[in-house]
Image (tube, rainbow, N blue to C red):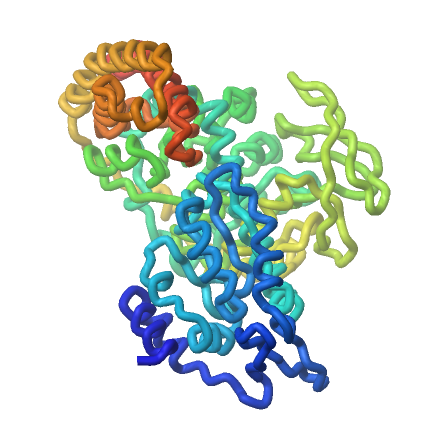
Length: 616
């Protein structure tokens, strides 16, 4: 069996679809030419469209280039190598041969199946291809690349990502690699933002979820309303400054299209006499409650909320509620099992994303955006509609500026905002913040995955690729008259009866009662071990170390503790996400110490919270 056959067999044993794609790839011998070199390792000459040759490696010693490529690796911590182009497999072979114990997972990003086949013909890699740590993206489909990123994001976030570009591949497929790396960076930025939120507010978010439990049990679930707008239109109303100029057009359309407003836009709509069918709220912070101050909600308006939202909002809402469960946490999965089904909706990076996801789940077609500016006006203006609690003003922003000063708002002073320039809906570039730029990219990705027509009738702000653009008046005129939206929402039946809350909470309360004693013992062991000057191997063999690890595992893997405390413990668990070397026992010990102390700190408070919820 030759090199290619051995490699293909190994690939087929773990990735049969990928092996079939490689087997079907047939490099054109007039375009792909393997060349001998003085070192004995082949190089590759790829003939470009203009007839010029692009060399994959030098004609003398390809391994010299490989050593130079791998010399950029930072060996000081556990890393995840991302090979931008497989070349002829030389870097991958050298990486596994010399550093296989240093890295966690590894990713190969190769757009050309013909090149990958040539690598399998040239370099023996059957042991690597059979290793579960290797992940391969082959071809130019960016959607499947995004799926791979989503799968690997825990590994990517746990290590130092190190990009190892194969320069000729980067030159040949520059647009592909640029797009793929941009998508990866956006996913990392989204995840970093999620992690940062949990590190800062995890305990508050966990408390919100518990305090929202009574409201959750008296709400409709997504499963009760999914598909109810099939064949009908929906308008997602955000609170960008353009809403001030066209909110009046939404008055009187309540029976022709479902109005799904973000919480930030609720006050603007009510003061214009508009009754949204649904108001969506998701933010866990106390600031979110300001959107509901001095607003008298219509009895027909449904509050749609997720479990993390600031708990004073659902508890104060006097009318019907719709619970949008999240699949992201042990608590929310327990809710679905113990009291559901409610139905899961993805957590949007902004409340606008969540409102869009809800319109999509309701089956609306078309989905129309209003007030979704996601950008600043270069001529100056406001960040939000005038009645929004987050409203700030700003002066004109000069072309190409890297920052803008935003004026004060209620409860907060002026601030300096970093600026990114993005295509505007009217053609010229418009300034936006770094956060809103990420929001734009996420909307574009989600629009691409949406089967319904998406129409941006914002009449200002950033361009959303994939959405049709229209004036709001034109979009509304296409809806027709009398489509029965109001009666459709009015006809929702009573909320079905849920399981009793008391019996479901007893095992969780029992686990919380036992956790502090285990955490206290674990903390004592970390202090005892830290006083002994032993080698890493000797420390890990000590009975105290084994008992400490056992206590950690008992608490950490307890399903009841996860339900009770998972988000509140995130700041302590986050350090474990970051991989460390086996010899870094002091670092590992500090992680255990912090975890046990955090369990001790938060357990009593959450036991009191759950007891209070149980008594409601």
